[in-house]
Length: 325
Image (cartoon, rainbow, N blue to C red):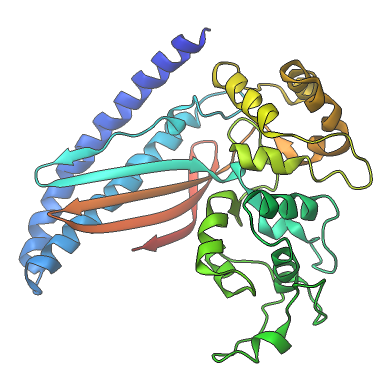
């Protein structure tokens, strides 16, 4: 099947999903009337309720998109899938819904930077994170504090490490967690992670993924960082030009088979084939399992947003994180 035919099929499936959204909206409007009568806090309270309902409808539409996509049997996920297509704003009366969906497997998992026993850093994944920091113009020593936040001991690591002795000396003291991150937002508590640094990191890190980066969806910065995890074996570096070539190639020819991934990468650039054995084989995949959905409802300028992450198994979505903003 040609790439254009695949996109046409995806567009038809998306249209069906959006029609389902219209039906959801009809039900939402019924709830609107109830919510309007019940609101006792004036126009803002009324519009806030309506905006929240719209945001929830957006999440349900996103869930429908993921379930529809989960029926496919291709064995890989790419940005050509219906969830990867840009979702246009959906207007209903004086309200509007915006929805974004992205996979978490495109990112680097913070919790995989240490072993499952949290005694020592992962020798291959920690260099990848340090390289990510470098690419984002962030001090590499921040990685020391991230490791200390998770490891079981109270001995600071490296020049940027921090344990409870540091955090308890702050104006508003708290203990070092010494456990895995529950949310990405926890990074704000880690030494050296300023608000600006957090915003730089947030698009590229997760705590929900399988730990393997989906090479079909990863952004350029993550792809470039991956070549750092080579241990004592240096097989080359994924520079900006090579990462851009990979992204251009996968647009029409996504990687489809894990068994041939090395040769498929080498066809894009021989350097990628050389790097595959020492590092990429154990750190990349062509599948995505966890998805980040963000939907906003806007009613007369009053905006409420639902931010959530779901684990997909087939057509079943299990929510792992849910926040109303």
